[in-house]
Length: 234
Image (cartoon, rainbow, N blue to C red; front, side, top):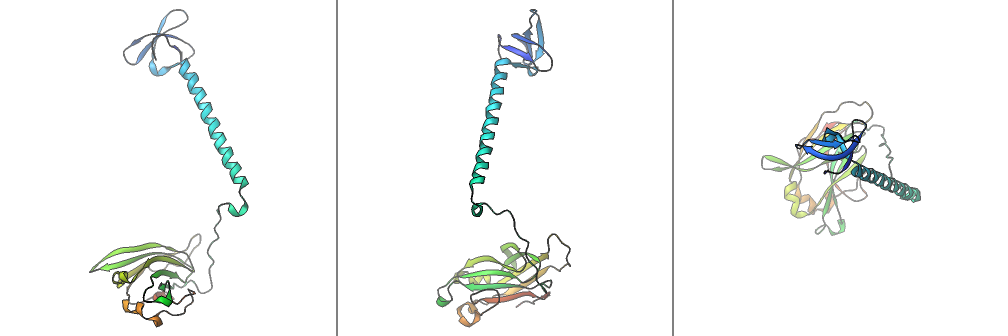
């Protein structure tokens, strides 16, 4: 804003030409009768800038509308199979599944090459409850978090892939779990806290990986809790 600019008042009708300033906050506006009207700078707007702001807002609105139309058109052109899935079915419950049963499972990635293969670990949830779990590794008398997550009812969750060089860190672990259901009432379950000793020698023996109900491949399975009964330290 400078002397000579045409301005209008924001809080009242009127305006005029900037004829001078009083300090940093007051502008003198010469009205149509030739009188200088003192106004706060924040209460006036330069007419040219006002027009620019109006045009700018219109342009922004037009661009937003064009973007929205483009997105809608792309969504309409998507084949049904290509559209993102927004519906997720609730996990099915099974008879007898209201007693907690959960297992820590180890599966060789290539059981035919047992001496060279790497392994995958899973937490198997054989119950109608969600399980929020934490897998801890012992380091002397202290523990550190190895993995944490949630397992849906009657499913299994991948934890990690590891090799034989990692077996030492798995020798002493602890599983902690909280059980709950969503969108319904349920019987309260005690928190699970089960230390386990994982025998690294078993990973070298083919017969320790057995047929089971949870995997198509043979697996080594450690029981954490079964029918609401937590296992003692192994």
